[in-house]
Length: 201
Image 1 (cartoon, rainbow, N blue to C red):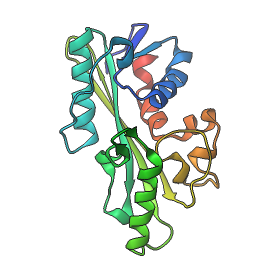
Image 2 (cartoon, rainbow, N blue to C red; image 1 turned 60 degrees about the vertical axis):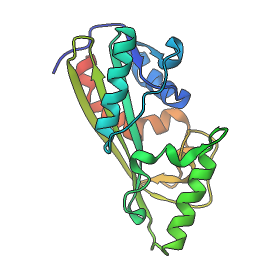
Image 3 (cartoon, helix red, strand yellow; image 1 turned 90 degrees about the vertical axis):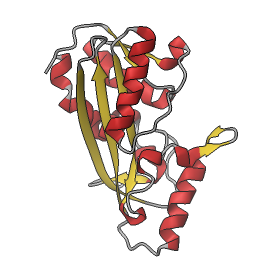
């Protein structure tokens, strides 16, 4: 495994919530996180059918455009009662003509579970795949999973995405009800980063 010895890392995202999570997780390691927005980079088209494939697309586009090492994340929620949907289409479910609205996506998830009369507990998991890519093409990839279940109604005002309807296993609050520092210890992204810890040691 290659060690990361730089002090600046491009987080290949325009998602402010993801960027803040990475800053909270990597900042204590002395790493400054910048984002696609800082370089006015376009969103590459995500054409793969797996989280790993889409993370690679984002990392390669960011490195090619800036020459900086890049960390790309592709993540989503996998709901068992919906045959694994929305999965890689997690953000697509929130798309509207005026941007993303995750309340619409959460409503769709619950409505479809209700339509199928899915029994409780309505198990689900957040999955994250991280791809760390150096300008010379070297790549390291790491996966993290947070198991839990879908609950209703939406609960909490913190977090982002589907956090208000996801209750992690062993807890009685949703990610949306947890303070960021607590969620960051439990999240799929944190677990993937924990596997990557040696790279930043």
